[in-house]
Length: 539
Image (cartoon, rainbow, N blue to C red; front, side, top):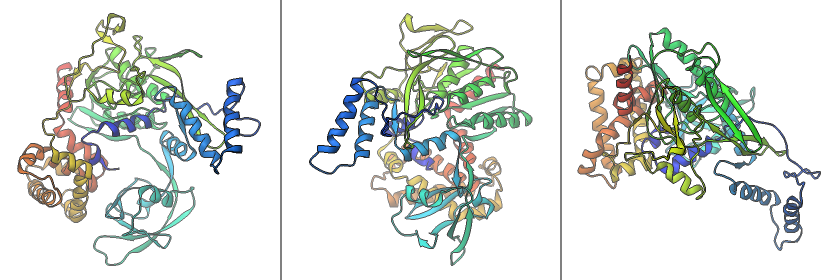
């Protein structure tokens, strides 16, 4: 996972993120099939026309065709004519999506990347087979089952297929470790590997907790609950809950997490559709954080389940919403399995916030315009202009508007003052990631010996860590000047602060783990600073 590749957001990448995050409904497990075992259920004359057309093509077309591929194309065309979030999932994509939503998969338990045609371990997943067998960050996987995989063109999908497998099966890998002249072999027994959705959880001040949630999976509520309990034990009385870039996920996860913040019987969300009766979801007793000041962070990448949580908090005046207008995805999908391990996600209802707002944006001008519009306001002062028909009231009588996502109480446009051609090239080519990995790989042992954890390093940035910061900055500038065709002194002055920050965060992540990324970037994040100000004013 290249965190360096997402720090300057591109609309296309965000659109893909949203598409992958629309699995909001609950799986209903029904199978649609004919007496011939096909993936359609044909009951009307129009349905029969589709089946007849496929049969005619199969039996009479001039060239040999792949009927399975043709059927997939037909289904995709049907789904594309509905709305941007109804979709067809071929078997391989469906399996990957279900893993994401289940919150686990089976494999050897590593985060990896392919650097210079070599599989590099970014970090072993805690508690997984690789960590148990002593595999470390920075190790190179050079062989898989005695087959060389180093120095050849190998893509991530092939790596995943080679290393994942059923629980209990074995895979032998050859590891090349820095400081050793020869690889050594490790036999790993595949196991259940958790996919964590809480990326970071720590005290950002002595009394303010910070939780970053990347998506809503089946395990998310338990993860958030554990994070809340741990933070309260260490002195948390206020909370920043970061949902920026969170594309959503399962409805139950959103409801359960919102329940932790709201008192008994308060409405969280309701759903309603042409063929679905209104269903209301309410908070229950005993939430982990029903008292204490709360700030929810959102942006244009916050969708579906993220908007349920933010909308409920805003409508009940439970906390302050800070950032940029959320994506505006208020359609509920049901996940319907087909008989060949493929599936569709079919929109069956809309969801509404407690005040009655529908957050879904218009999609009638097509999917491309739909996704582009969500990105259009990220660098400007966005004003939500709604008619009286879209005006609603919170519990305390404040005006809020429907029709286009959740508009924050405190609006923070994206700072684009540091954008430059050089910055675009650095981002597009992943150069900060490459540099950060190489720097960490070279100095990991020395940095860990001096600073056992990220907090030690960050607390000493102007003291003991000063020489490391200077070293990083000097080597970074030299690296970019040697690898960038667009390197210029003018662009460097404009973008250097952001590039250095992301390089430092990448090094910290590679040395001390994922949470260190957020501990570094949050120190310079204007939205985090504003959230701390709002929480201080409220207390």
